[in-house]
Length: 200
Image (cartoon, rainbow, N blue to C red; front, top):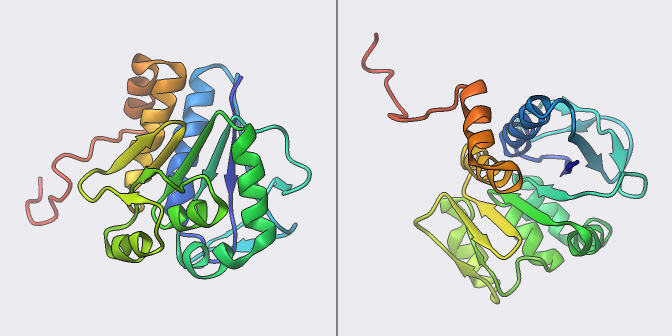
């Protein structure tokens, strides 16, 4: 059984966690419910995300089940607010020590850097924030890969790249054919990525 814990907070970028949530929960369904995914936040009650979507967390930082995968999204809340929140960064640091995998998307890598798990590692983040992350030091920003794996840390570039890295992760956990089945189920095949000027 794999338990995925996805951190949410005010001004988190929606697709940074909703995309991986789709991958993780479809994976769980294809495994006959053997796995589970939960949303975790610092406080109870609805969380308003970056584009206005409100979500209701399942657990707070002190009452969630043990997590096999810790997921940290990006967004303004990650890079401007939560990396200065010692309650959240402390929780990430402690939870990452016990988790089998740590998964960050977009500027969630800033939060992982502030909390510790990304320090000294090769990472990816959103292209527009690569210089700012690198300037923080003790990190190697990889600029030409949608996602980067360093030990048990998986980080990805912005938004949709989180789906790519989540698919890689379920493949690592449950096999390549399983990951391909998840990809087919969610009909994720972004090539070519833009055809709006060529109607079918």
